[in-house]
Length: 114
Length: 112
Image (cartoon, rainbow over all chains, first blue to last red):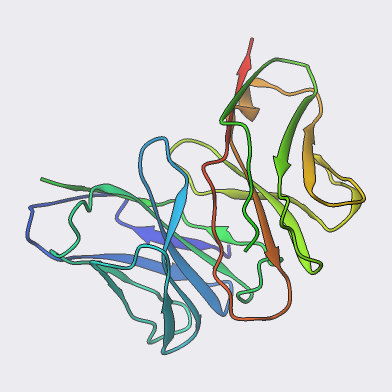
């Protein structure tokens, strides 16, 4: 089955540690995205990527980093510089970056930092 | 991207038709209107997309007036499983290098 996988589903870290969230897709999509969602809020865009080795900052990129070394993978690192990292993180992909193209979302990773 | 405004929440009884309206006064000529549904602790799911007039699929209908400054998502005969947050997105389908923004959405609560 084609789709997007995110791992792990739940992640716990101590404050001051960097943590990397995994996102893999086998849909052969060019575009990939990372969103953050806080309780009762909408999705906020962290980073997005159109093609391999190219990515752009979204609305809340500070304290995060990404890489796109392979078409199917778009890992997100939450660094110690992110002041409030506890949140629900969603990865998505689409054929390309045009808004008219449907975004397919993964199941999400819930990160808790204490 | 054009800014969108939706009601924060809505309640409906099972079996009723639900209409959720989204305002997008600054929509541009090339903008499409897209709706997503999100259940708790899951990623959003595409529902429907349109440019003008009416679009219908197996899940919902989308009504867009001639001036395109608003759109209405219509869910026929809702059930408890339709309880979710519904997001309206407006953006240009031009092939340009753009980012996508989800607003806070409309939280629909279906009541037995």
